[in-house]
Length: 159
Length: 216
Image (cartoon, rainbow over all chains, first blue to last red; front, side, top):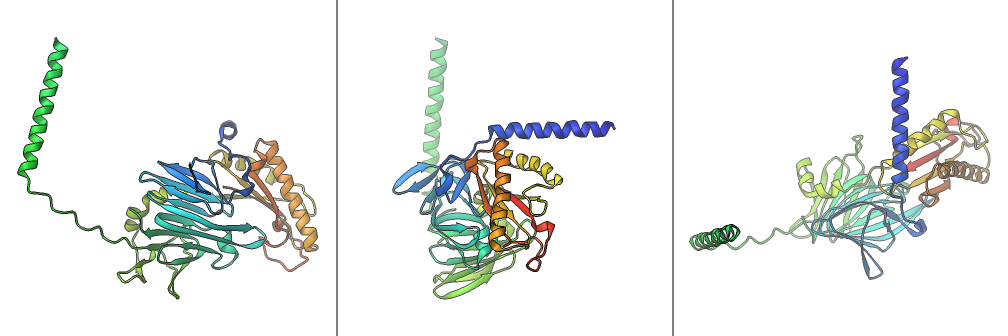
């Protein structure tokens, strides 16, 4: 009886807390229709280059096809794509989102190029739709992604 | 006066420190030229997932292909350029990729809500699950949701596409009513394309009448 009450109070407290947090959540910016992905984590200096412009990347920023993500010597960035692919780059990295075509009901295509630095990938739905629908390029090779978790270092970068 | 004395004392200390440093520098042999940096190789390492499952990556260059399909299988550029298969260790991975790995976004999580046949009404258990969805949203940076409707295999593709989208939109509306911005939710209808339990066409299967909410 007592534990039942305590549990109920406790679960209600957790729920209230969660709902309270939901109100303070940093939501993604509006106009998300064109976005292929979204910045979820940022450490140090991170830029998004788009159409010759360079902007500091903040948590919640949209990432689009043809964008380049650039991290500084102290930087790291994590992005979740619309197909649930996770990309995260370490310091001194340059990652180009060359192509991102995703329709849940059609085979898509996702190509990124790591020109320098380090990258961790957890592939998502596009890689599941068809073999080699997702590719990651490095200066020396092309990686056909059949799933799911892997790491890439490009020769021009550090560490 | 006191302040002045102390300050000049500090300066004297600084000066003697500099002198000492100079003496040490003079005494030490000239530093050896730094070794040329080791050429950094392109490197690929396949990781096991949290459930221990290992996928596969095909490494393609110059018309050749190496498939990595075991835990920590790796490939890197050799001296002449081509990729050489190898085996990495967890320690190596940690030393090279620690920062990239620590920047990884939270893993997307999926909740499944079930529907009463041929309707867009939830089962009672599914109502309660929505609270868990709200908790998942609250714990994530810049959260987004995909709400995907699914049907069982009774009826035509067209009918099921429409029904699945209606189910997804109903869930989307409910999430909006609970304070989630419409721009953060995408509702899609997947019809009978992706059954949770595979059946022959025309079979009524409650476990396939569902909406999957993915929070990422």
